[in-house]
Length: 280
Image (cartoon, rainbow, N blue to C red; front, side):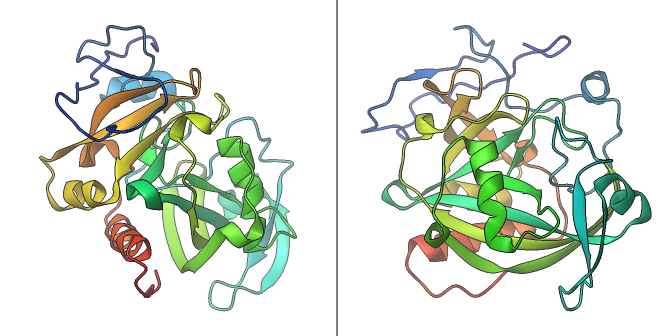
């Protein structure tokens, strides 16, 4: 466990979410017995500050990767209205100057179990450490197209995806200040269908704390009710071959007030129902 953090994992009790699953699974108690690592649950301000020297703001930030030198990594600067590339700049300068750039988001859907996979952000992230985010989020580097976000998927999940696996949902504009600086993002949103078990992924420990699988209807439920807790499975990046039962609430998600989570949840349900997608 990280220094200064208590383990507030909630036991999932009589949850039937893992019924019929073959991979090794165990439960996490409220007090963290059993040797599992990071907790899913609320963090205090003092805990966040002890983990990260950069103050997180009040809006969602994505793609603040660990281990990448922002003064070297090059991003395309784009016109947010057209998506046309107008120049290039270092990641550091792009965020310092508040220039529009492109990022990749992907939510992995599991049709056989009607569930989705969320990523638990690493404790070292500049924004919202240890909060649940989309499966994959990251910057598109200079010269990359939205489909090249498969590079981010391979880096953050440790498995490869084919171009045909990506389903483009649409684009969104995101603007906020905090994390890396002045964030101005043209977000390319995708779904990906993938029925491999949660324990088959191999996320890097410096980028990702772990992965969480939860029913898509459960995601909608916690977005509708701040008090709701739903059963879920958690696989740590340190012990990816073993999953553990836990519960998840809305407070575990990266916060946002623009309705993005709700739109994603509704669209994910439609995708799993084979209904026409309406855009993001």
